[in-house]
Length: 197
Image (cartoon, rainbow, N blue to C red; front, side, top):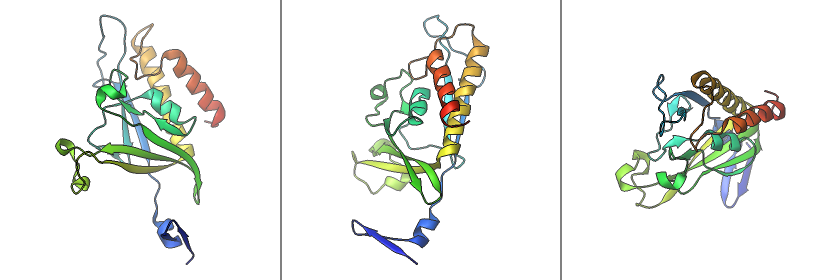
């Protein structure tokens, strides 16, 4: 029954043991599962990435598209990463002013990746859990993932993107929110090497 106090917050071991890791699952497919849309009559391939946390889609009210570039970068360093963005690749266009804060740290059950996802509280899209907060407040939703499983899941998603794109068109271009093919290959190789995947 040990306790620890920091900044006036009392934490008991019982409370720490109640913490559960979140489970991340990433699904990847072409648009609606079968179609490839071409932008401006070129060979741009649109891949839809969906994140499931604990078996549920992230229904936070503001999330637009998932960026493979932001996801990959979140594996290589802490900081603010625009994992969610507009389909054009510019988060600001989609009304996203802050990225996900990604922290890499050690907890009692091992190495973890912690996400702090910014959620603007807007009247028109206010989730039930935020009904008491005033309009315009920015709050954060926290997720904690096992680091090795996180890396493996992102790695599998990047490999699936590569497979889908290569099977679709001979010389594909990817929209700005996606990694280009060279960058995709580079990230897959580096992840395999650095994280023993």
